[in-house]
Every structure is written in C-alpha cells, then in structure tokens.
Image 1 (tube, rainbow, N blue to C red):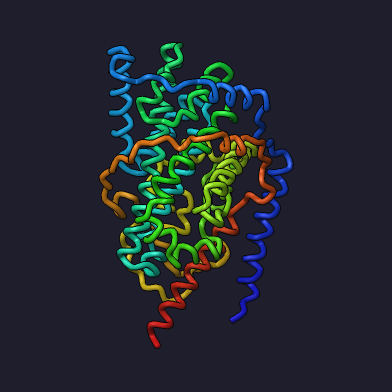
Image 2 (cartoon, rainbow, N blue to C red):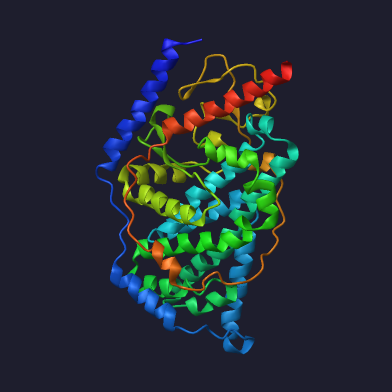
Length: 406
C-alpha cells in the first residue's frame, strides 16, 4: 500500500545525501602523484636486483628484528577485530602513513561483512554452508592482506626509530619487490599519496591469486548466483561512518563510500581503493568525522558501532521473527525491533590461519598503469544508498517467507 509519509521520508533521505555530496565535494582535493616521483621508482625497480637473503647475508640483529616482527604480526592476525585495532593504533602513531587509516576503515567493513552473515537478514537468506564459505572468503582476504602489509608498517616504524632504512629486509617477509623502491622514496620524501597508491595496488594484486583466483573460493563464493546477485543489485558496499558534529547521534552520523560492482575484477578493486582514499583524505569533513569515529568507537564487528538506532548486538533480537518491514528511510518503524548485528566474537570463532604459498606477483610494469591521479568521486555520500540496500534485503527476506507459506 502506498504511503505518502514513507515516500516523503525516503525522498528526504535521498535529498540529504545529494546535498551532502554537493557541499562536501566542492572543496574535495584529488589524490595527486608527481610524474617525476613515479618515474624515479619505476627506474629503480627496473635496475635493482633482488637482495640475497641467505642466512649469512643478514646480521644476527637483522634476524632478531625479522623474528620479532613476525611474532608481532602473528599476534595481531588473530581475527578481524585485532587486525583492525592494530591498523588504528599504528596510524595514530604515524599519521603520515595514510594507508594505515584507510586499511583500518576498510577492515571495519570486513568485520561487518562477517557478522552480517549471522545477523537478521543474511542468516535467513543463506544456508549454514553458504555462510561458512563467505566467512572463510572474507577472513582469508582480511588475514592475507594483514600478513603482507603489517610487517611493512612495522619496518617503517623501526626505520624511524633507528633513523635507518631497513627495507632491505622486505624479502625476508616475502613482500613483492615492487614495494621496496616506494618505501625507499617514502622515507626520503614522506609523500603519502605515492606509498598509499603503491600499497593499494600491491595488496590487491597479492590477494588476486591467493583468494580471488583460488579454485575453492571461485566455486563456492565468487561464481555463485547469490554472490553475483548481490553485486547485480549493488549491495557490495564499502562505507566510512563519519560524524558531522561532536554529538554521536543518528542525525549526525553519515556514511561515505562506494559500491563495488565487480569484486572479482582486480582493476576495479584497485581503482575503487584509490577512490576510497580520495574520499577519506580528500574531503576534510569526511576525514575529520571518520577520525572522530575511529578515536571514540572501538571496533566490535557489530554495525551497532556506527548506527545503534538501526542495529543491536543484544541476543534478545537474534531470532526475532521477520513478519513485516522494519525500515522506513533510515529509521526503524515504531514498534519494530532493530536488526540483529552481533559482535564478531559472538558470530564466529577465531579461524586458524593457513600461510599462503610464496611468490611475487610483480612481473612487468603493468602495475604502473594505476599510478595516476584520482579525483574525489562526485557521488560519495552513501547514507541513503546504505538504507536503500538494507531495505532491498529485508524485502527479499519477506518474499522468501511468503513463498514458504504457500
């Protein structure tokens, strides 16, 4: 039945997002990459031979540092919550390394994707085995990126502490040789956009063969109709909650981000990563609001972290029967329960990490095709799109329930 109030409320939310896009993006700063810096790195990469990392090539002190970083990485690679927090702490100690904050915010999304599988909606639409496959997919990608990137961050920290370039140790962690000249340059120039873009490229290429092209994940996740259907209706979203005032109320919480239409395409993932970087660091209101959110809101995996009026991690809402729509625009309808969104620790046990096969993805200069400036997307405010996607999901749940009753 048509409801004028419902129609008006949804239009108001949409107009609010459009206004936010216009106001905040007018002064957005693009991610720029100086051609001279890119050429310097490219030439060094072409001429630099691989380091000899036999036991005798490194000192005992070097090996002690390598082992300490390995232990530190393994300690924080326990689950999505520990990884996300490790990124957060690192960034606030080293704010010049923008990638760490981007990784923190994207890693929060990884946790939300994991707990969604046990929440009010997806637990109804997917069977147990499908949910396990998706969790393993999200977990593997999250853990592999951390395993590759976090030792690089710790080497940078130690290089600062010792006032010495320690990136000759990168091969000990099986990091692609693509990264070393970028780190060498960053230590000299502190040019954040260059190292951030390099890390975005590296982590997506690193993940490509180990997760995206992995036969198990292709058969059980990427090529399944349900995964493709989610992309078709634009439900694969990456969002950055950002507070637009010092009061953390629903009216001041907004969501910036993008929709990924083809997650299996490495080019799209890289370009999306660059655009997300431009949104997060190119729009001052988003950056300051996201920083406030990260400082004041510990990551638990529950979407209640950013929208407590829509989601709850309380067990009482876990098995609430879905009988009618709960969402009107971006508000729960009076009398309806919130969406159940559990803490990660309540949704999934820690998953033992299986080390990947070693190998370097870098073979030629094609990666430098991505070394280009990127502008702030004109449409970045995802507040209304997020709510619209949530409403799509609940309508599918209700349709499924109606079919079962026939």
